[in-house]
Length: 206
Image (cartoon, rainbow, N blue to C red; front, top):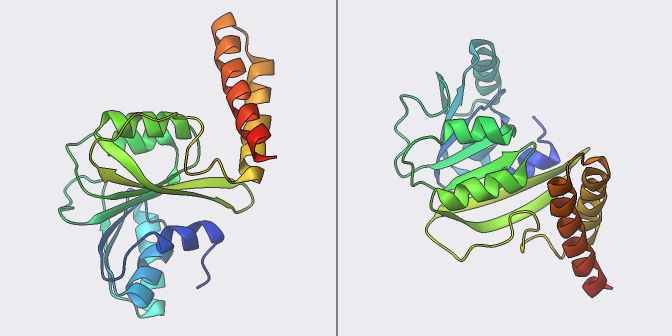
């Protein structure tokens, strides 16, 4: 089973021999890879019975040793001392899943609203230990969050990604569109400041 670039990068974030909870595991490809290639103990979960059934078929074919569970997010799961992976969903859904006094390491890849995710995790007492961006038909940001306080950083322009020139250009285009389509003065000002900041970073890179 071949992993996409996004899933392969997520797996690179996980240390050898870790206990892993793969939330929203879908077909359990990440869990299978981590068990077979990194000797990880994995629990693949999903809210969908159909997805878990598909995951179990993949696990059987691969001869991996991966446990499965149908559940909503982290409900009824003992996640202590585990690395929790959450990917394949939007930030609002991820925030709902993490509405619990959790302190474990998190590897998160949200499909959208990355600034909101960074801000929410900071407010929950987490800091960014590592962050990378991968292009897999579109850009995905993969973040390793660790529990602990750090100085507040800009939620929109990540210090981990400012050296990725192509991604910064992508952000600039994205926020230029946001600025152009803004209907309120406050939004115009907000996105103008973002565009100005990104332009400043890009100018320094020349």
